[in-house]
Image (tube, rainbow, N blue to C red; front, side):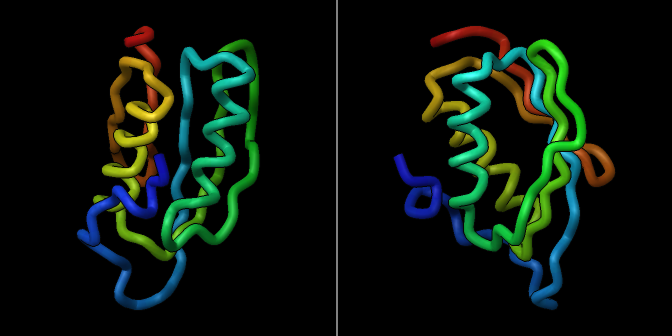
Amino acid sequence: QDEQKRSVSGEENRSGLSKAYVLNFSGFDNQEIEHIEDILTGFRGFEHYRPVSSSYRTQKYWYESSGGTAYLNRNLNLMLEDLNVAGRVVFAGNSFTIEKIGSR
């Protein structure tokens, strides 16, 4: 269940510079969020992240990576599979919204 092994090589930021994203998580419980934080740090290209805001079942993170957007999108979808939850990942601008719909 290691995202680095399962991910596609896909797009990468060939300049080597970090790109910043906002990751919005909705519907996840505290245990799932702790697991998500561990998974995020294992993605190839990971630079750092920090929580921006948190409320009941809604968390927002600033996430920097030298990996590409397509790579991050793919890994976020694989993360949902690893968590065994049904959900959706939507990308717009520099933001990903990861919404839990239910358990599988």
